[in-house]
Image 1 (tube, each protein chain N blue to C red):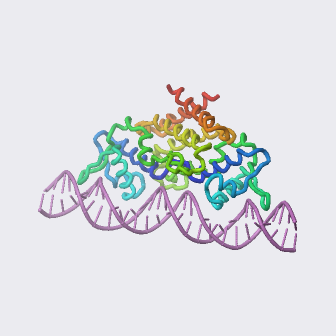
Image 2 (image 1 turned 180 degrees about the vertical axis):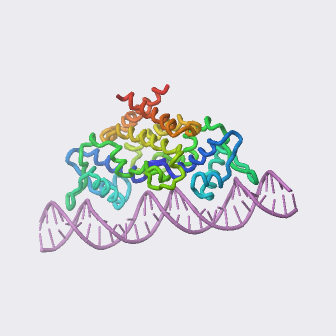
Length: 156
Length: 156
DNA sequence: TGCAATCTTGACTATAAAGTAAGGATTACC
DNA sequence: GGTAATCCTTACTTTATAGTCAAGATTGCA
């Protein structure tokens, strides 16, 4: 259970764009340099983000990438979904009903756990926007920590 | 961000053992058959779980696997940790301080998010025991859903 | 128009995760 | 002791993920 490379670096690239002043843009090379990854790899990620409508791109000289919306309107849940929307694709195919001979269809104690985990993570990601991550490291951490702490307090 | 195959099937194998009456055990072949995966693969998973002290094994005729503790004393957090304890091993090596030239050391907006996500998931897994999963599908789901719902209610 | 800068696309390679196979070691039973 | 059942261990194969490369398409500018 880990954040994939694609998720992490894609999010990093978006964060670079979110830190720009309004109207500014960055080229592939600039993003790649700031993130310390190759242009080729960055290109692949930006293509995904562009296809999903999270960024806009312009080609040719003076081209580059910008966020398609305000950073405050882009939630982490949407970003993660674009970069790897497969958390619910369990290895047991019965989740999606595709594999009818699966031995777990009747008495599966695992599926509800995976579904609940997905909901918990998703609801945390829905509460954080790109804009919140552009602040200091401390403020971003506090925002998420608050969510975590809340869930602890209620249970006692 | 998904549950790995090793995590899912390892958990499934433990659940088979948790459903046994006290003193009963299952062989590799029996576990494999019930889970619909190969004996070879099951053997690898059980070896991991045995090494970590979650199950005990006896060799030879009449051998097999049992839980090393009561199912009510085994929390999902421990199981996941054994099967894939790498959620915090981010792709950016600055998380662990291993990669000193990482461009993100000073101004990393991502690390706190990953750390917080880890804490949120971990705290949910700490609240669920294997015993809770042996009940009906409904009861297990409800246990986790409650945690999720609590975190929502506090935020309003 | 021609050139340079840029994004786009598809095929390729490398690395990590998952799964398989086979022989060795241990135990129970006769 | 011998034999059959079982777990243990290492090496191998397959598959999925990550990352790279090179050629193509679009744009701005002289």
